[in-house]
Structures are given as C-alpha cells and as structure tokens.
Length: 307
Length: 273
Ligand SMILES: Nc1ncnc2c1ncn2[C@@H]1O[C@H](COP(=O)(O)OP(=O)(O)OP(=O)(O)O)[C@@H](O)[C@H]1O
Ligand SMILES: [Mg+2]
Image (cartoon, rainbow over all chains, first blue to last red; front, side):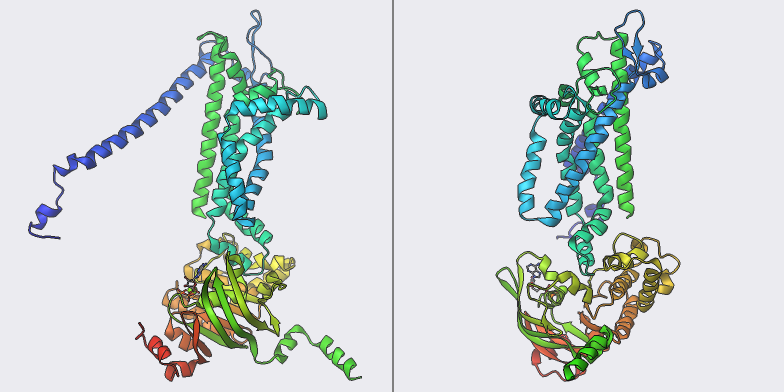
C-alpha cells in the first residue's frame, strides 16, 4: 500500500465517506428492522385493546370467561361467555399431538444422524420436506375423508373427535420437530460420540446417555416449536374435531379449540358486537400463549449456552 | 494326569496373573495397511509394542500416526470407507478381524483424544458413565473407583469437593486428566493417547507426563506426540512415521542420540523438509 499521504489523511474517519454506501446500507437495514418491530407492536396493541374490550366495555367477568364451561353468546335473554372448553381443547390437542409427534420426530432424527446417516437421511429428509410443503387444508381434507370414518368404524364415537384433531396435528408438527431435532443431533460435536464409544459403550448407550442428554435443550425447543404450531393451527383441526361447545369427556368426543371457534364465528358476527369482541379476547389468549412459548424457548436456549 | 494339572492351573490363575505370564509384547502389528476409500494412509507397517512400555509415535502431520492409533481400538470403524488390512495381534488374537466384539475390545484398549472431550455431565458421572454399562451399579463400588482413578490421574485433590459439578467447569488441563481418569477407571490393558497434551499449558503438561510415566506400571501406553522432548522424556520406544511408512522403530534413547536412518535424524533435529 502506498503511504504518500500522512497517517492523519489515511486513517481518520472522513465526513464524506460515512455518507456513501456504508451509511445508506445501514439506514436501509435499520428501516427494515424498525418496520418489523412496529408491525409486531401494532398487532400486539391492537389485539390487546380489542381483546380486553369484552371485559372493559361489555362487562364480562374475566374469571367467568376463563373458567365457565358454558358458551352461548347468541342467547338473547341469558348469554353465556365461558371459553374453558375451547382453552381445554386447544391445550388437549397441543399436548396430545406433541406426545405422539415428539418420540416419532426425535426417533427419526436419531435414525437419520446416528443409525443410518448416509441412506437414512437421503430417504427421510425428502419425506420430511414434503410433509412441510403440504398445505393444512389438505391435511384436514385427508383427515376428514380417511381418518374420521376410520375412527368412527374401528375405534368408536362419531369420528369427529379430539383424537382425530390430535392425530392430524401430530402429523403436521412432525416435520417441525424432526427437522430441528435432526439439526440438534447432527450439530453435536463428534468427539462426544467418540469419547463414549472409546470407553466401550455401545452405540445405543452412547445415544441414550450422552447424545440425547447433551442435545436435550434443543430437543425440547423442537417440541415446543411443534406445540406452538399445533396451538395456532385452525383449519385442519376445524375440519376433523367436530366443533361442539361442550367440554369433552373422552378423547373420542367432539370438541373445539380457540382457533376453530374464531375461524367458525368471525364471518357471521358483526364488528363491535359482544360476541365479536369475545373472539378477539380468544385471539388475545392465543397471543399470550405464543409469547409464553417464545419465553420458554428463550429460557431453554439460554440454558444451552451455559452448558 | 499332566493335562489335569494344566487345566487346574489355567483355571486357578486370575486374569491379572495371566497377564503377568504373557510375553513382553502386548501387541504385534503385521503388515498393517489402512485405507480411506482408495487412498492408503498407512503402508504396511510391522512392529511389536512392548508390555508396560510407553511407546511414542512421532512424525510430521498427516503421516498416519492417528490413523494407526485409531485402528488399534477400531475407532476407524466409525469412519465410512475406512478399512484395514494385515493383522494386529493382541494375545494372539487378530483384533482387526470382523468377528471381534469392538465394544468389549474398547474396554480393554482405551483411548484418550487430542482435544479433551468430557461429557456435559458431572465429574463423577464422567467416570461412572462407562462403568455402569460394564455392569457396575453399586454406589460404594463406584465411589471407590471414582476416587481411585482420580487419584491416579492426579486430579483428586483438585476436584474432590466438587465431584458433582459439571465437568465443563474444569480447566482444559483438568478436563484432559479427567478423560485419562475415566479411561483408567475401565481398567484397560492398553491406553492409546493421541497428542494428549497438545492443548495444555506447560504445568498441566508436566502433570500429564508424570501421570503417563506413573501409569506404565499397570498399563501399556502408546502415545502420539509432536513434542520431541516429551517423546524422549517419557517413552521407552519411539516409532518414526513418514507418509504412511514406519521409517525407524527403536529404543527411544537410540532414536534420539544415534538414529540409524538419516530422515529420522533430520526430523528430530528439526531440519526436516
Ligand atoms: N477421515 C478421513 N478420511 C479420509 N482421509 C483421512 C481421514 N483421516 C485422515 N485421513 C488422511 O490420512 C492421512 C493420515 O492422517 P492422520 O490423521 O493419521 O495423520 P497424523 O499423522 O495423525 O497427522 P497429525 O499429526 O496432523 O495429527 C492424511 O493424509 C489424512 O489426510
Ligand atoms: Mg493426528
């Protein structure tokens, strides 16, 4: 490099250069970030104010809203606004579907990374990607035409049930869990594997006692992301769950979730009506839940860094 | 009559005594060739490894030291496309053959790696990890082995108050001694060490070296090292490798004072290239 100019000219920040490309690029990405943040804040504020209106303006008691099992907003004389059955439905399908999908997804991930890294991955990876690409309405449609009649004939009940919703959701969240779990397992350093095997542990002992525990925070994150997806899914569930307003007493009973009630009712209620406002309140519950999921993931990933 | 006595004798000797009756070679390598796919990394080497000796493997980077070392406890099985030809005899058994139970083999031929690789568990669990798989479940027995192997690895005094803290909270040198301790805990016959002190400061390194010399009483040790002083300080025999060939193998003293091959001389005096 030529050093004809004195250091002062070469190295001091000049006013001009900070105004060209460097600066413009910075402004652009800051604008993008600001836009994203303000959109999120705007949605949160909107949902917050709308969601609270049924309690502030329409005078429904929050306690009643959250704990009553009676939902009858259209009864002119004696309307009831208890959404417990739907909260219960949402949590039930979420946990049950995670219960099915988590072992399958983590098992698949272990198969792809530890048991058959070469051909196993070649086969399972495209399968998983395909599952991601199928739109939820198709899952619902398949559930409706295959699963619901199958359960009606071979298991019992009407077929439209918590069980159908659970199974459809399990299949839908399976790729999420599998993908993240696979990444978690394959990013484990090889020396952990070798260290255990070199001590005379078998492959399975190594997987169970070293690899899975080491990947546990990421595996839990995978499950929670799957659950977040299950909690928010509306369309496919709505097509198979039966959509009744009662608290289900068995897994074969028809049921409803917060999301299905919102999609079913948002079309025929008028904006500003009490019933419409309660739908917003349910939306607020969904938002709060997704914040809770994010916090949980945050907590887990902070634990991962410490280890 | 004679056979009956013989039978009684063989039945009476313990495994420990049996080892002591063994010839002075713990391993015999015959025409060992190791391939990664089509590429040959070790070109037909033959050597005897002494029992209760420290054998040092030296040579420039990429000459096949690790490849050879990893073949001794079949760690190369984990690498797709890697295969070995020839023989490594361990008590007259070819441990490269397909019908060897590698899990059992690795309990007898343990390995410590270049980079300390403790499991993300407590210090105590790092040592009991493989013991439990070997069927040891009783807490009092485990406690005893943990203490004994940490003592041997010269780590006990530093960690005895925090056995149940994460092993990752130890310093690099302590982690490496923990890795040695968990290998000793399995009571192997051979310990393979692949540049065990390359990531350590001089003090930890000195501790590890003392430890290795100490371990020689009970174990046969093969160590890969890039540190010539280390090889000359701690080993009984030294093998010099160069691009997959075993160039010279002799008593360490001979190798470092009066090598018979010129390449060896050039390498150990740093005039290589
Ligand atoms: N997993 C592998 N796949 C293919 N080739 C490999 C693999 N591991 C090592 N090799 C090759 O085999 C040869 C010997 O490698 P090796 O690791 O045994 O050398 P080394 O003597 O241990 O070197 P260093 O002192 O750097 O550790 C090298 O040419 C290397 O590129
Ligand atoms: Mg090496």
